[in-house]
Amino acid sequence: ETILNSVDNLVDNEKTYEQAVDILKSGGLVAFPTETVYGLGAVATDEQAVRKIFEAKGRPADNPLIVHIGRKSDMERFVAEVPEVAEQLIKAFWPGPLTLVMEKKPGVIAETVTAGMATVAIRMPDHPVALQLLKKLGLPLAAPSANRSGKPSPTEAEHVYHDLFGRIPLILDGGATGIGVESTVLDVTVTPPVILRPGGIVKEQLEALIGTVHLASKSEDETETPRAPGMKYTHYAPEAPLYVIESDASKLEDALDSIHRQGKRAAVIGPDELHTAKADWYFTTGALDSSEAMAAHLYKAIRQCDNTEADIILAIETDQAGIGAAVMNRLDKASDGKRYFE
Ligand code: TXA
Ligand code: MG
Image (cartoon, rainbow, N blue to C red; front, side):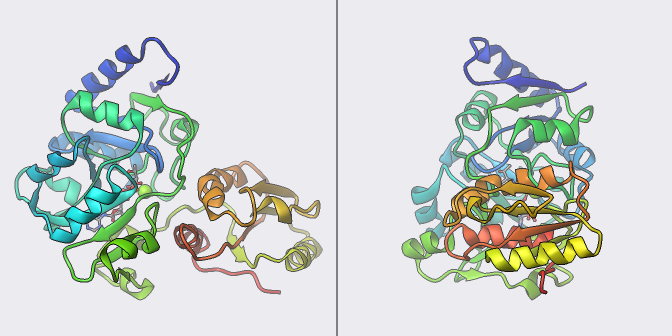
């Protein structure tokens, strides 16, 4: 059975952390909140425990996991060489939603975590519950997003419960996560560094600090051996087909008319300002000009679409600037590149 324990505003937090640490130290899994999405943690040096993550999620074994640490200095145990640019980035952005891919020190982190690669992805999350858990545990946690493979990442404990009920013993409920899309994965083993997955720390922030940063091209992540192996799999997919549509009220209404003429029903994911009674369901992602709000609400909205009888989902696009790049990257995957045109 799966226990869901709240960790804010409770007097017995101490007991909950103890329980979580006990489970982890005996090779079990615990889901916990981070500032991006909920993670599903196992002790990263425990091969058997890490395997359970892949089982619980139904995750392909060739997709490596991120190692979460509670103190910057913990990194030195797992990384063979910390490039100078990594030092700068860590100083500026840790704790925070930036994952760094570096050369790993062999023999410390369980092989399954890195899926046999010579590199390891590491981040220090910026969430009081995650940090407290890591501090009390005193060991690194391998943790992918705590969803079933293929589903959107969980931004609320309830999403984890829905996906992993009966598959894991404990979920720490720290409320809704703040950022709502995953961390940026940055490969610093190459010059210039390459963004393998856009996320919470945006390209503009990275470039302001360290200069040019490349974005892994789509063709690159669709090759046989992509550098972020996870990017080749289906992701964030709702049950009904999802199409990205331009942010334009009259185009949206035309699309809905056309869908209705075909006897179909549509769920729309979009900003407050484009709300229309023509949509059979409308899930708002906040203010039109806020990519941050869209990031925070997107995954929940995609999940909500699965509770409707919609035949088709229209998701309204946002600007590529800032965290908009991460939002559009996820929508591209959720839609498998499909756009709605009249
Ligand atoms: O915000 C996040 O990063 C969340 C929270 C829980 O920390 N975690 C997360 O993990 O999104 P996951 O497993 O869903 O995504 C990890 C990504 C995958 O695309 C994986 O392929 C990539 O990081 N990755 C992990 N290790 C790597 C490595 N050594 N080299 C390249 N990519 C790596
Ligand atoms: Mg994931």
